[in-house]
Length: 227
Image 1 (spheres, rainbow, N blue to C red):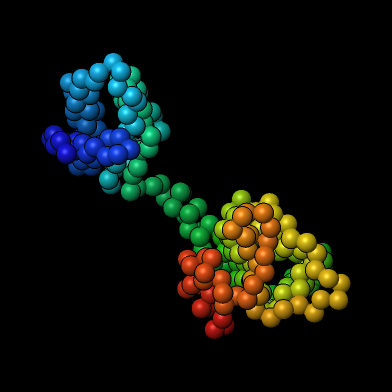
Image 2 (cartoon, rainbow, N blue to C red):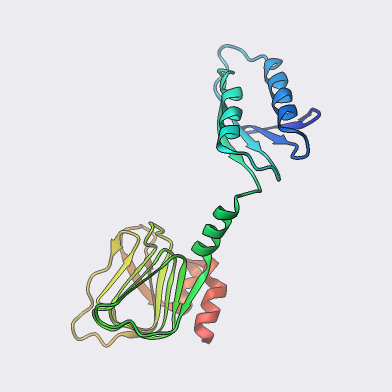
């Protein structure tokens, strides 16, 4: 690992990682980067080296990020793979919060009604035949699911759909649609639907077994199971 005044360079199997001090002025950082790259000599036959930039607690604008890429791109054997920062804009943080929040709704979705939300949906109530619920995240129904449920609506194939009583007219996760249940199906208590390991179809299983395929849902599952 090579250390300069403001930039620390670490070589990895994947290329170079540049750790940039977040306490110095932006111009000082660029000057040191130019100096480091201009004194690095590489053989003509050396393959492309990928560069990852770690900015720490420094936020950069799109223009500043583009400047970083241009400084590095001037050196033919270097290509920027990723620029990472611990800081995001307030608007981005609010959007992330909205998309990851659990949205609680206590109501009945009747025929012809549609409920659409960002993030995970916890519905305390029924989805009647002809009703529809849509979420960009997971869907948990603490009641009868007899209508249509679409989880992972923005393309999240890891999303799941669970219900206290599962008898839907249709399940959909991302772009994968389940077959219609048998006409005489009574529905199954505490069942969960998710895309199988092959990514081809939606399979059903007891909600208590979902931890095997979606371990990140353990905490949420305990809330659903315990009401």
